[in-house]
Picture 1: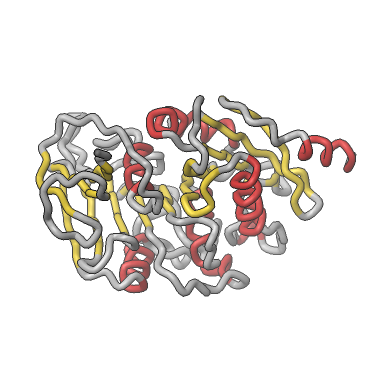
Picture 2: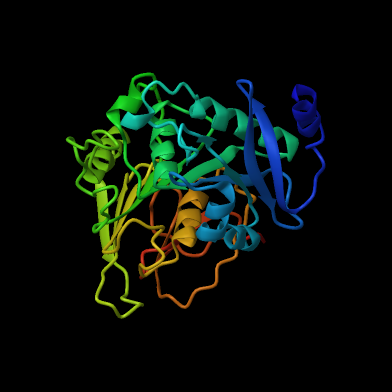
Length: 335
């Protein structure tokens, strides 16, 4: 069996595009993942991880998230890792649920090791690798960040939280700022927005505001921009964006999007969450040669440079185009 697993791993470096299912040997376990590559992917392209929720799967979150379409439009690779199965046969990420007490699966090391492997195998950017996930996958975002991961550049948890019991072996050790984009439903009845320190099923967990405030303070952010999305669904449910930043730098922003729906990807909100996630990640790409095409009928409010200063169009420079719907487009216009 071991020889078969190793053979699968050694056959992986075939460079191709589209969806591919693979196994990765980690701590003696054969871990599954799906790798998606758009056609004609450029060398040193970004890599985005998308993690499924509790009882979910790599295939399920790939279909649910819509991230492959965003990858096709913007030129990045996507990895959909899969958790291990617990005592009841449910796929999970080991983030500290009370009923997983005693489980010794090291998902932090698995995901970091897989990311490094994919970067090397497919010539992907080691400095532009990002992580997002839904529910249990969103909780994995937080756990990676609190572990002080230097493998992932920024995180975007959706409907996730932090379980203090899961941080025992992952105390916050980072000495650098970490960009965070949090999306959460105010009517989430699975992972309450306000947290629950007395939860008897999952275990005690923190509120969204507590987590956002932690990262805002840690990243030393002093500026806040609040905006409301247009009610595109005409259902009276409002989506609000809060964007925390620093006048000195845009390399450590924290965003919070709240919608009035429940425990989901944000599909019913007035936005395309997977596009918003990529727009956030792309702000922190440190490859100035990347050019992202962006078609929008939204009104341009201002153009700013890397220091947040308003400028006019300038060629051969990294500029940020700020629109009235709260989106930000990064451009490099080459002469």
